[in-house]
Image 1 (cartoon, rainbow, N blue to C red):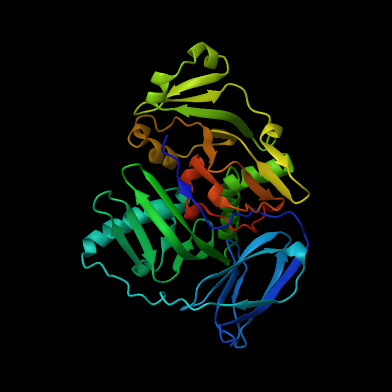
Image 2 (image 1 turned 135 degrees about the vertical axis):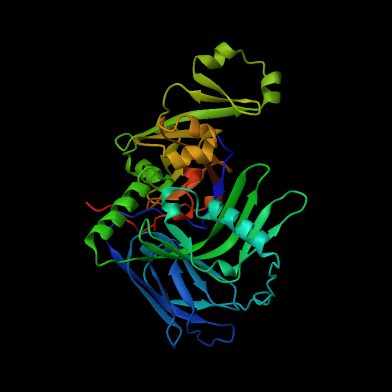
Length: 389
């Protein structure tokens, strides 16, 4: 299995179940108290977004109950962020933007077009992904991207002078993505990215295409990390097909120094070798969710565990694209052999706090591997997406 991959948005909110609708409105000003027309105002990761009018005012209608990250972007000014809880009321917001003196820095253009194209192909694979959805997705303005490759480490980084415009024909979305960070470390096979997406649903006069989009959205959502967390909150993880086990890993050096006898571990864990040395231990029995997931108060849940969670989604098999991504040429030997989708979750802090709506207060506190790491931007669903009954 590949090393853990970190693919973060600056917020992570799940589809909401509450039916109440809200209005988020306000006015955007600059530092001189002058209104700012044409600023992009949106709820990160949703389909809710607009531009401020000639008076600097905006209004987002029909927003479901929950916690969101409001983002305001305007050229020449620093990005503005505000966490909004609809339960706190709907008073109009007064937002002041701060000038960004570095915003107009000159972008370095790569003169070697062949090198840029090679770097762009690497970026596509690690940003859009290599899934079936990615095959039907396209970055419409790749010319806004520039790349830098560290000579000593080979780490590739990317910047975008404008928002990336993406068309996802598999799921039926147009996405505007404000890229804040991208890096790929080829030596350790680890990539990371984050930014701010705003989605627009595509429409078609053909019913068959609309049905296909809806079907693909549901299939992509089921088994995702967002779906998994929602089942923890709702207490429906068993009926939704999730099996959760504890996992721990040891390097070869740790194994050589370990005084624990194999029989002591073997009664509770399966041992599997790791390519390159070391071993991973997977618990034979599923864990009690109550031991890792609890309610803090009427608004907040806490996910707390050590080492790793090994999560299997039994209702869907691995795709061939995933096996090829994970195993390379080994997948070619037995292309028909598939297993249930399996993912890894680990925490980078003591715990992960989650609002009852699914809002993850600090998404830098977790990392994912396995099937969840395989899913990239082309497999991203708006957080206000709901499965149709």
